[in-house]
Image (cartoon, rainbow, N blue to C red; front, side):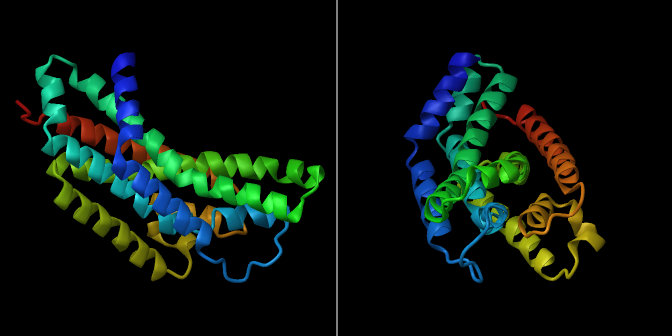
Length: 241
């Protein structure tokens, strides 16, 4: 299983689609201006650095649809099953490699932005310590929510097993979520707050609601478990010979 995971991670970093998505996402994230942000305090720096993350979530979604859809079209997964590999091991290794890619695409831009702002504004070590707890929590929870949103894309891909429909439906679900959230004045008082994307907005568009990190982490974890379980069951019952 370790060797299989190494192969999947190697394939990820050799994939042109991964690097194209990574560079486009990072470039757009770094160059999109933040309206209203001039000088930022260290606390505001955390929010400003993650500000466009919800918008850029489309790129990790596309990565899943493209990579898994391509594996089904090229019969890479089929051949692995025919070679005698356990479906569970194939699924786990491919999903882990994909989630590594999701975090690289999702978190690279905030890291670059935070470093650049710290260099530009020369925050004191005291400010860095004060905001450190919030920064760590933000990274961990946004990573979890990003993987949760991406797990929905994985489920769609395991249903259709191709690129076109997977990209189309995954993008459609994402855009529908955005429209629903944009039509909602107060997410906290709406049933849409159970969406991982809604939780991401509540965290990134400060001020933070009390206990929001814990609630967001719980919703993210439940979403990941539900959709990855559904994806595996779909994969397990698929005819791939």
